[in-house]
Amino acid sequence: MKNRIILITGPKHSGKSLCARALGKITGIDVLDLDEVVEKQTGKSPRELYKEGPEIFRKAETLALASLIQGRKMETSTLPERLIIAAGGGLIDNPEALSLLSRHGETGIAYLDVSPETAWQRIVKTGGELPPFLKTENPRVKPAETHFALHERRAAAYKSLAHLGVQAENKTPEEIAGEIADYFML
Image (cartoon, rainbow, N blue to C red; front, top):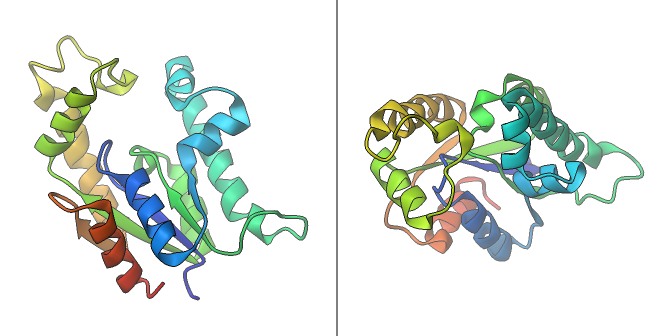
């Protein structure tokens, strides 16, 4: 049981939460969504926190991750010994949170790789309000200036951090979860 925590990372709308839940079903390991933990701890959604300031959201995200990683080690912890965490797409832009991961050493990191075009189509398909970091003069007409550049930068960083990269285009969450389970021998 080298990896007591499996962290599922990837860009916005890559299927992190769905794959984490599928992985939980396959392995019987508890699953938490980091954005949901942030909301539970702060009483505000990640989007609300981000609108207050990116640094406010990143601090809440770091505290939420720390509570999951370090909280498991406390004698009074009610957290399970093993855990699957679906991270937010921007975790790679949070140096403090990444520092927690590098110090922890028992975290296996899987990166869900989808093209920027696929991620963009999924974002647009969901409708509703764009996240604050994708709002520019006209991100739907000039996505290369917002989403595409952000996606490419983050993808390169995630790929260098992850223990496993999974091509997530045209695969079901269960297929992706199976690859993750096989790799980490869950």
